[in-house]
Length: 179
Image (cartoon, rainbow, N blue to C red; front, side, top):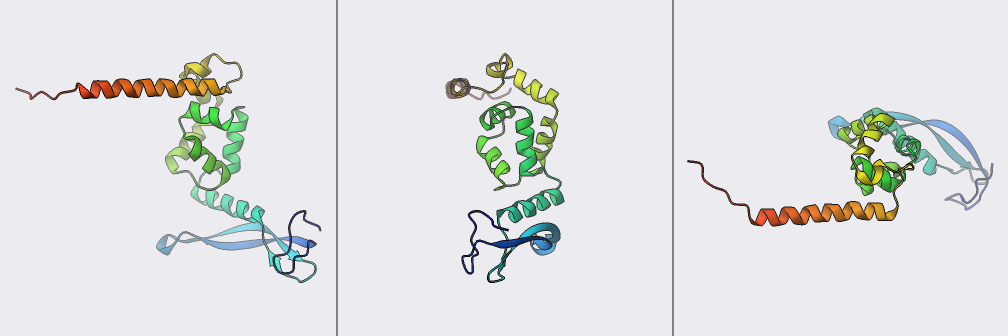
């Protein structure tokens, strides 16, 4: 088998045999450590016999960790967002989940906490997404629900105005003793 763009780390050749093996690996540390298993693809160089894994194996291991923790995998999170026909920006704006957090979860750089995972689980229901969408005027009347840059800008302008208003009120806030 020839894997395009991959060279053997040992000899530089490009022809491999790929087979699946069960990889047992440790997740966590100390008393909380557990051993997990995942069937991963292993490349064996046809020239020198060197064995190595690639990013596909890392994705599979990450999914095993997510399954162990009872969390949605990056692929499931992307699937959720795609099923709603939303860009990452629109999904973040509607759900209130930070764009950077969503990006990290979808790329597998970070596993979301239990509360956010529960929230994502609830967002699988189109009805729940529609309820959230209805709360944001910029999205409520749109047929596509994918905001333009100007829609997001208006959300941030609104937030800035509310913040400035709160700062003004805070300056005039005085505590009065109870008698």
